[in-house]
Image 1 (cartoon, rainbow, N blue to C red):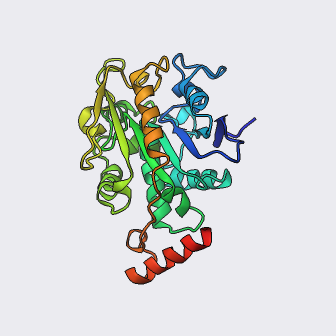
Image 2: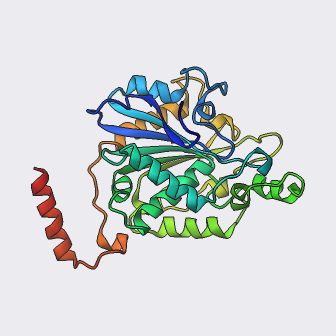
Image 3: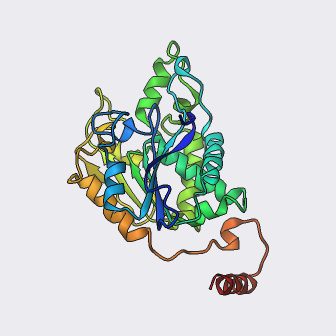
Length: 290
C-alpha cells in the first residue's frame, strides 16, 4: 500500500528504457485516481492516465498523491511552498528528472507545479535542477493562477467550516498567488516552458470556480481554451475521443521529444560563470555524453 504522499504508478513506470514520463497532479480535495476517472472511481483503470499508457507504451504514466484538504476537520494540509518542496523530494526519490517530463494538472495542482519548478531553480539543488530542466510542458486544467472565487466564498462563510491554509491561499488575488504568477510569467526560463491552458465554462453547484481571467497565466502567446465542462468534469474525459484527451495526447507527442534547453546561470541565479565560460562547460559536458 502506498503512502498518502507518493507517486502512484499507472503504466510503463518500471520500463527502464522508457523515453519519458507524464505526471498527473490533482488539486484541492482531489485523489490520485478518482480525480481523473470519468465516474470518480478509484478501483478500476478505465480512465485517461491508463488510456495514455496504452497508446504511448514507451512512456511512464504516473499520478501524484498528496494531502490537500479544504477543511481542518478533514485533516491538516501544508502551505503551497512546503508542499512544493515535499513534491520535489518525492519526484527525486522516484528518479524523475532522468528523462523528459510533462505535467498534467488540475486546479491547485497547476499552482503546485509552478511553485515546485520555481523551487527547483531558486534552491539550486543539483538533485532538483534536472526535474526543471527536463520539464518539456505543462497542461493546466482550470488552474486559478490569480485565485478562485469559490475559495473566497468558502473563507467568507468559513467561521464554522474552518478552511485550511490551502483554501486561504486560493482566495482570489491572494498575495502568494500574485507573487508566484508575476515571477513565473516573467522568468527567463520558466515562462518559456510550453503550456496549454483550458478553462471551464459551466458552474459547479451554482459557482464558476475558476473564471477565464484567473485561468489565464498571462504568458505571451498562450490563450485559455474554453471547454463545455464544469470544474470537476474538465479533468474527467469520458473516452479517448474526448477533445481534451486528444489535444493533451498531441501535446505530449509534440513536446516530450523536443530538444532539451540547458538552464543558463542567469536563470539559476546561483552561479557566477561568464557566458563564454558557461558555453565552454556545456560543450565539454556534451562531449562527455557522446
